[in-house]
Length: 206
Image (cartoon, rainbow, N blue to C red; front, side, top):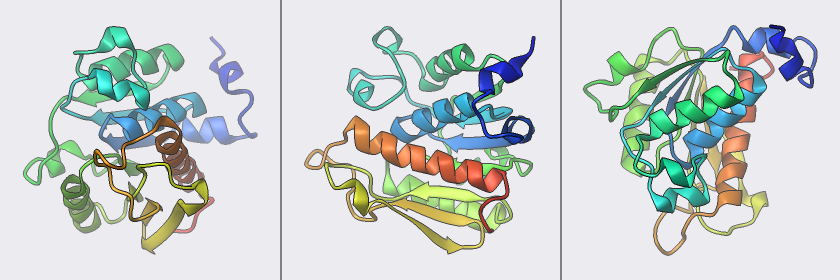
């Protein structure tokens, strides 16, 4: 089977390069599921997704799941959906909560890039601390501030050091007052994915 035809709209040479790359996504919610879908459609070769949660009805406004998947583990449902998009992609899933104790085991040192896609600030800080210390040679993209109905122009990409990027408005946290809406979550996830692809292709300086 000639799988190149499915990615024929990619810029020349991109498909061949991305097919050799492997990524790690921490979280399979609003950010993680959208990042994973975009990477699958771009033709990434290997993806590992870690999340311990299950699909809930409240997730469906912004996450890449369907009503008949409510109650399933997010990683299982996402694997199912990604396999329909890109069956040639190698998909590994970990249905386990990432903690300071298991980070080293769960996040391979051989991965090409790490996408932080958690909801909670403490979880973001935990994985950032681990990666900046123990996986500092691997590009790491995190997100801060994506909730609410703020202007798209407020979303920024900031480089905080070697192999460390932050995307978001830096202030609008997820809570019942701000809420989360599909368009803003998808926007930030798309920016996160596109930055990651540029890094993988050598178009962004480390």
